[in-house]
Amino acid sequence: MSDYPRQLDITPIGRFDHTVDLPGSKSLTNRALLLAALSDGPCYLTNTLFADDTERMLEALDALGFKIEIQRGHNAVLVEGHAGVIPATRATLNLGNAGTAVRFLTAALTLGKGTYTVDGIERMRQRPIAQLVAPLRELGATINHTHSDGYPPLEIHANGLEGGELRLAPTLSSQYITALLQIGVYARKGLNLRLDGPITSRPYVAMTLGLLEHFEVPVEASDDLSSIDITPEWIRGNDLAIEPDASSASYFWAAAAITPGSSCTVNGLGTNSIQGDARFASVLEKIGARVVIRADHTTVSAPADGKLHGIDIDLNDMPDAAMTLAAIAPLLDGTTTIRNVGNWRVKETDRMAAMQTELNKTGAQATINGDDITIHPLPDGRLRPATIDTYDDHRMAMTFTVLGLAKQGVTINDPACVAKTLPDFFERIETLRTQASPAH
Image 1 (spheres, helix red, strand yellow):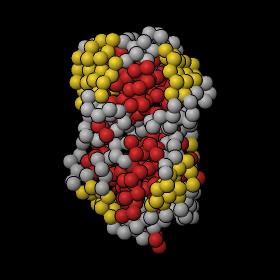
Image 2 (image 1 turned 180 degrees about the vertical axis):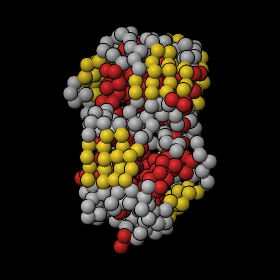
Image 3 (image 1 turned 135 degrees about the vertical axis):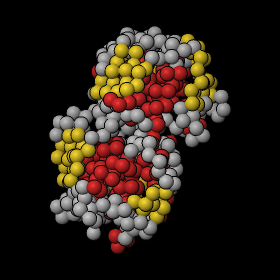
Image 4 (image 1 turned 30 degrees about the vertical axis):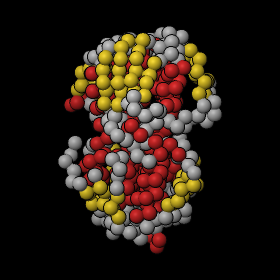
């Protein structure tokens, strides 16, 4: 990771035309690492993301006794699966602020035989996990909250998982559902999951089902995903090329959309993508950007007349990319309302409050109404110089950097927090600048 200063000034960029090759998706990498470890054979994972969240998963799998060969020079990992067996019988895992690692491993450890502790940094101890612990207990797990009820740290006393039928009300995070789906095949009775009501961030559940299919897990799901059945069997040890990170792609697509005369193509993300955030390009098209989507790449270009307009849109399906829209909303012609993103509050920080606070610093008026946020354009198009607090949240740093590419006066506090998912983010932004015409 680069040795970033405590503060980083972002300067506007000129017109550019660039093609980007991004590292693998964080969401896919952490799912694939765990599924590979639980599989019945070796799995070779390519285009693997190496960033804070995935490093926590790799460290945890190593601590649990899984054999892992990391090939950083090839962005690859070879994982020897143990067919649903957790090799270690005792382990204490500190997973930092990696929400996927905490949730996925909490569920996976119930398959073991022994005692395991799952913990993280102070912010992780503020992130709720009761909506995962309660259903795991229903399926036969013994899990204790050792500090505060409903939150990590957790102590898991494992002796395999009984499984069976489980009915869930809507959850704060789709990761709770994913955590259950990834272990259902090794529960003694399998998993018969019934979901009552809307699914938060539904595309992430669909992504998980796509991966389970890749690893040949016997799963049957209704079209609306309200009913998902997994038969007791095995996860097959198959190789996987991990898709580029669509949430990270959103920053580069948005930069092209807001920079007159610019265009950016992201390879590896197109109509074939299983990531919901790959559809963020279509959101940019709705506000006026020009978009071309092919099977294996997507190009976003600024509108010919340079004008982008505000929008009223429900982005529950893509809460991470929704932050990118929020950050560029002050530049749009008209008010923007982003609806149904209440789960921002349980992310790396309370993103709802953080986004409102930092947008207001720039002179853009942001107001919150329940799970919706409304953002007004900058008065007279002028940005008030602002030092953006990032709250140890990578997405706060990256989204506001995009705003700074369009308007002078954005400074990012603690830019190193991007290491959570894209450690070389700022170097990649500079590659846009090297190809750009001078900003005016």
